[in-house]
Amino acid sequence: MNEPVRNPPKLELCPLCGKPLTIYGPEDWKPSFDDPDSGGDPYNAVCECGFSFSNDSYDYDKFSAELNRRAERTGRWVPVVNTWTQDEHEYGATWYKCDQCGRLCETKQPYCHCGAHMIRGAEHA
Ligand SMILES: [Zn+2]
Ligand SMILES: [Zn+2]
Image (cartoon, rainbow, N blue to C red):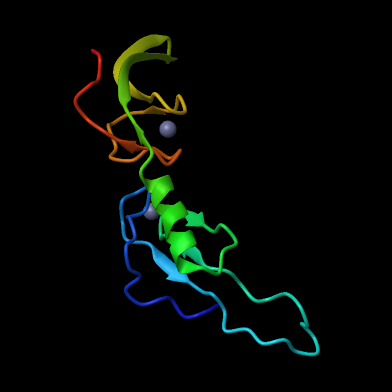
């Protein structure tokens, strides 16, 4: 594994959990007898939550621009009543549905797993 890039400039936080991303690469690669043309690894971003991103770019500006665009996607939590049956009892609770991917979540997280940054204010009850 390459060394992480120190203090990567102009970078948004993880689009899933909102923590700082760790940026790797590009590999300081030279052609060798065993590996004459792979070119080494491009930039990639990883997060401790499991998120990873790469656009196969060796150009930091292009890489960070695409990564930031991903982080800027926004969505809203729409309250929905979720019901389920357990031990012959019916339960119901208000959960929240991502208007981007339809994923149901028990609580309003700041980021949905589809990558949308969830914004407040316009939820319809
Ligand atoms: Zn994360
Ligand atoms: Zn979503």
